[in-house]
Image 1 (cartoon, rainbow, N blue to C red):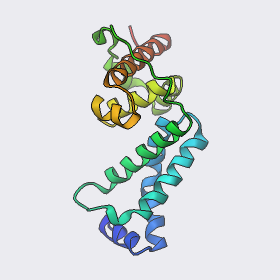
Image 2: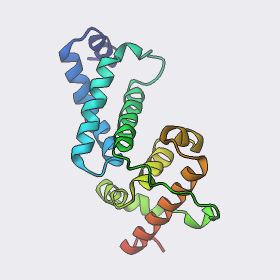
Image 3: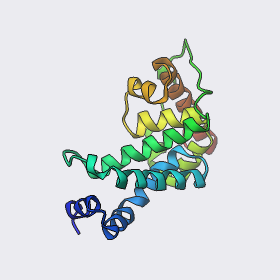
Length: 179
């Protein structure tokens, strides 16, 4: 089935189309949920809830953008809701004087690390660092958008990213990937 046929099937509440959509996108969306959630069970909850929400609101998909991107946004929002519900984002703090240039991550390290290694490094970060890092570096959100999504200040978003990069650099140095 084509993506358009799957979307039409989902809009018609066709369970076979829903299953096909789930089977096609669940691996990628599960990986996205896992980046935000330290526990595998939480990532699974996010994934199931996100697909339920996607199927429930399939009529709001306008087909003007990417279907995968639409589902991705739902997964990210569900992950953020779970983190908010667990109060995991309340511990974010703001730095006032930091030099962001001193916390860059060597590109060669990212090229040599396996996906599992990267997930392990992200898991070792506090929730606030990991969440802002994912939203900014991987999802491409701007600090203003992150601040609005997480109900934090723009400066807190920036400082969490700086601290996440610093923590990542330290971990990479311990593993021998950075200078």
